[in-house]
Amino acid sequence: MAKDYTQLWQSLGINLQKHEGLLTVLSEAYQKIYLSQKNRPEGMKYFDFVISEVHGLRIEELYDAKQEGRKVVGTFCVYVPEELVLAVDGVYVGLCAGADVGSEEAERFIPRNTCALIKAFMGFKLSGLCPYVEMTDLIVGETTCDGKKKAYEIFDEITKKMYVMEIPNMKQGTDKELWEKEVIRFKEKLEELTAKKITYENLKKATQTVNQKRKSLQRLSSLRAYDPAPISGLDALLVNQISFYDDPLRFTQKVNELCDELEERVKKGEGAFPKGTMRILISGSPFAIPNWKLHAIVEGSGAVVVGEESCVGARNYRELTDEGFSSVEEGIKKIAQRYLTIDCACFTPNNERPEHIKQMKETLNAQGVIHYSLQFCTPYMMEAYKLEKQLDLPFLRIETDYSMEDFGQLKTRIEAFLETLT
Ligand code: BJ8
Image (tube, rainbow, N blue to C red; front, side):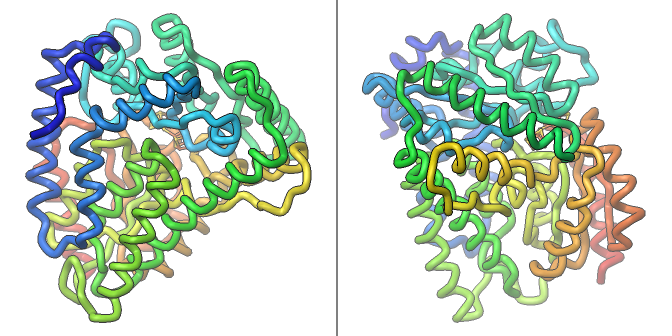
């Protein structure tokens, strides 16, 4: 029988009744979408367990970490350098932003036509449904899209915990300087928060830990290139989503164990789907947990998703940080350089992204690209037009949100797209 966390949730001010409802919906969706899949690797059992304890055991671990004097840092973007948080022995967690929750409450503060991700993080907090946000000592935002920037101002009024990093809009010389200074400012903020100094030793160790995590995700990604794909897109997506809030050392070990199993499957020619199944690359806005809609539609239509050109995907693990530094200052520079390689659509121009999509399509042997933007996500919606023209690949543009209202319509469009690929 599952452990009872009521007391812990109560102490965090969670709305117990609504929360119970949320967990029930989540568990039903998980049963239907995940546990009904066939030919799943054994190694997914760990990730099933993590999901079943998403607001339970992990929250208890964060509670214990805080009791030991460690600080919890919440984030919403892959631009926030995890290495620095780990260097001060902090806990880095992505905050709840992937479900249609608390929209009505959120719309008291932000316009109706705001992207689902922003509405969700506001909604989760305002309806008392995110224990992660309650656990945080600091919430780090970033000046990426306009929606997030302005929402963070309101979120600060509500939580009193926001710290915002300035992300440049371009990647020229002065932008690089600004970004490096921002990384230094963040380092100082963390040192003040934790009363711990970032040293060469702890920065090196943290960089290695984060690199190992990213390497395990790269390994998982490269295994998806095989036909038959040894793992479903849904399962690979889940692993990527969990990378944002699990303990990094344990997570890396479990992903590598999963990859060992997948390598065996590849040798035996076993797959999650039969050999020759249509292969799709998804590109665009992030898939915050539990946003599984698009993958469920694609895989429910007889294709397999073999990659995500997304922040919950390749944009998070494509580049490692150069570990060849010999001082804190040099380490900070390397970290700043690594993060500025991220090809978010918030940058102009964003010329690396089409190249990355092409490369991923090639290496993963995908037959078509589905470009997914969250509705009202201007950067990705706008960039999709340009990409479609520029890439000259089988390309389907989709705009959606977290609701299930357009499920049937999307399925029809995706099935029609898949037919054009046969
Ligand atoms: S690096 S993609 S995680 S900003 S979906 S809130 S962009 S309107 S999340 Fe992102 Fe960092 Fe960029 Fe990645 Fe705005 Fe679009 Fe909403 Fe978005």
